[in-house]
Amino acid sequence: MTDWTAKPLVLGAGETCLEMFLEPTCPFSAAAFGKIEPLVARAGDRVAVRVWLHSQPWHLMSPIACRAIAGVSTLEEGRAAALRLMEAIYDRREDFSFEDHAGGPNRRRTPEEILSRMEEASGLPVREAFDRPGVEDIVKHHAKYARQNGIHGSPTVMVGGLVRDDIGSGDDVETWVEKILG
Image 1 (tube, rainbow, N blue to C red):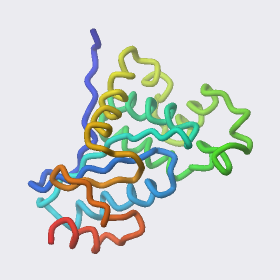
Image 2: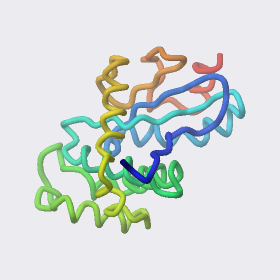
Image 3: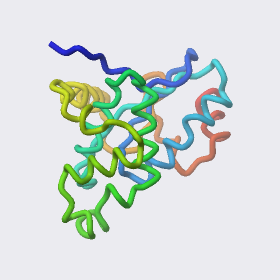
């Protein structure tokens, strides 16, 4: 039994549900993540954005990052802490990824060193949250939901339960608003 609850990564409270499947070390997911707050600000009370963690095997530190984010979502700050850690990872992506998906100095880093860097970048107790028993259940929930919806890559956007391949990380926020809300 756990003494914590994971907070859903939801911003906004509108009727239109936009779900984003993001990988925490992917540059394209970083671009999509950067659109969330401006999208919610622009769309007002018409949209709710839910972030799903979507680990991908070619991003070799992805499982560590996903578990860390899931873990901090259980802290008192919940959603805000998880989003802050995602932003910190995206802002310092070179500290959490491999060069050309296979090499570079991060090959020599241990998971403990990576978690320490996440703490330094975010100011959050990442290791404490990462170590919580049961955090893997949060990560499994995110993975199962993605599989159930046929999500294979990131970033992927769903609106109203349907995958929208026409909404990409390279689009500007105005284009997203137009495509989502019409």
